[in-house]
Length: 216
Ligand code: MD3
Ligand code: FE
Image (cartoon, rainbow, N blue to C red; front, side):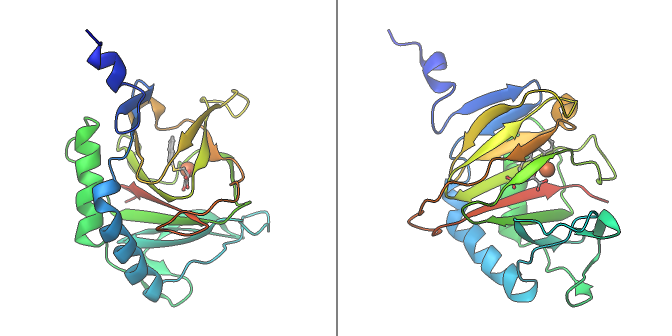
């Protein structure tokens, strides 16, 4: 008889462990796609995607926006969270209830009960966009996990170690995949390889990634 446990691990729609406290939930976001895309439309009408500057003066190839009480920003003064959008000096759009539900359900499914994100960073990638290896260390409570939702064309996620020089694993992320990171995997270096040109039937020639965080 076929070993169903073995079959379930590592297959689309299944769970793949990336580390002790890091898990890919393949396809977990698929039932939420319409709600997430509607939420992104609402958010970008108030706070459009824009390319931010790094502290060193480079322009990021990824465009971003935020919703929730806090939003992640970058400029010549560095990386930080802000209660207001620097484009209009108003509060970021509220986190839509559907997004909050998706984030808490995914965190629950990964074993992180009681996750209450107050920030959602939304990244928009076009073919060629990439994200260099980095750590996420601007959040106040580093014991809280991060939940990431991928939509649109695929990307290769780089999952490194605790040192920038550790050789990263390459994990493909597809439309509807969710990844949850916490515990000992929370501070790992990570990044995204330059996106290959492709077309997604629902999202077009781009990738959207939402990361839910407890920032404050
Ligand atoms: C692993 N975004 O916005 S999400 C980021 O696909 C970021 O847009 C990537 O890295 C993206 O900061 C990757 C996945 C992610 C987010 C936070 C992590 C992976 C993580 C924190 C610790 C370890
Ligand atoms: Fe990151």
